[in-house]
Image (cartoon, rainbow, N blue to C red; front, side):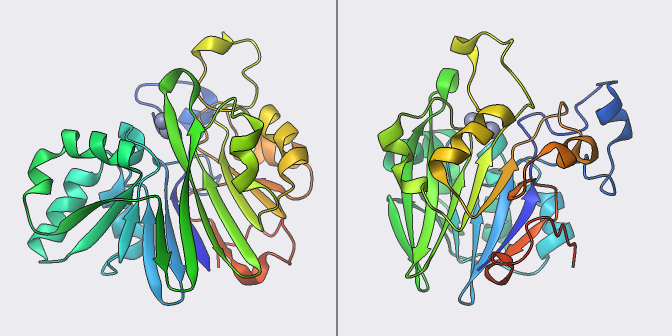
Length: 271
Ligand SMILES: [Zn+2]
Ligand SMILES: [Zn+2]
């Protein structure tokens, strides 16, 4: 398994439009503060899959995967920052006479199809409502998670004997039974938008912050814990040294492989 972060920002991207904060003004790929909207590319047993179609999908594609077509796209939920690139992606599939499956849980797929009625009628992509899928030897399952003020999202779990990878974005206040599928993962990727949102009104919140994610780690016990969906309140270089071993902040281009699960967590290698 190989997982590449095509994008790891919150809904607004970093830098934010017209924001003059220090992180936004200084954001670059070199300091890992320039972030496009969240999506990841998976390569497993010779298969390619995309999780979420970021509104930045075109530029992500040009940077990371030009010429490679995913077999399948998995969607976590129907929010713009996670599926707003479907129009571009659908056009790409149409013009290249592809047939790519887009898989999401039924209640997510209903919203997706409402948003893109024309894609449903055209060749190129095929919408599939499902909560499981087989990607080579990996069994992929979708698990509903609370998304606070913003509704719901689905965590995506990929497993085969001896290995489990989880991608859980945009979750908040998830009841313990719903966290069960995420426990004991080899790799757990979780959204943590801000460093500390304890001053915010809780009923208006929708995604965990870093402090809450760190607390959840004691319950979830992942071998490798990667935080994504990072807003401009996260300064990668300043905040990374504050994290305990085994926890890291994602950045655009970060690649995780099965081989390095057992290796050092802090090897933020670009190679
Ligand atoms: Zn989001
Ligand atoms: Zn969302």
